[in-house]
Image (cartoon, rainbow, N blue to C red; front, side, top):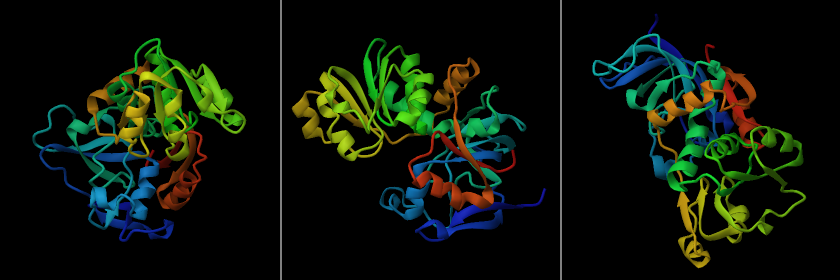
Length: 313
């Protein structure tokens, strides 16, 4: 194989025009890494937030940077200290966001960020799972410690994270309320939501006695969510740090989730998928040379599920 690959990179921060399809060297895996031949990647809002430079104070990336932090593919090479994977394994990952990403023909990932891909999912579907599903898992299961029989309000249930959150909340045995537009009511009900609230027609803040609020929107949505919680309830946000003073005032706990790689959780998610308990909805698919259009789709905030970059699948 040649030692050159195509990768979508940025050399500066800015709009979609800074995305460049470059020829760069195929990376060599370090001793604890594997080299993945990328089949599919997916687009998440964090990708264009990084592209715009919003997260630079937090992440301090060096440029040029390859974007994309969801990947499915085949193990093409392994570092000398890697014993849990072999060449040819089908894997998926949400890799370390501080490093080069998956909008590329090959990507190196540390072996503890990778799990075997769910057998029942296509490459495209598998690439749509890690970041969004781990975000829902870590928010609901780890931070909010959602229990069977509790009432959870999931904002934007038709979004990629919201769809996984509905399914994981139901798997835990919770009663699920979700906000969505009327055109997506059927979708969220199909995923298991018990009650869909059309945010254009109904006011979710009239709900009471909610145990857990999962805030995927921030702003006014977060501000109007506090009063829905019962005493001792929990709010988890993935968009902005909740105000501790407001949480205390309402007698609730508040958390912020910035998703982390986790191979053990990916292995459990793969089991759910292979048992038919975790569905992945694909909104749209693009090629590596169409990343700008894929970002444009993501930036509308209207995607119904995952936006996929098909690299070699």
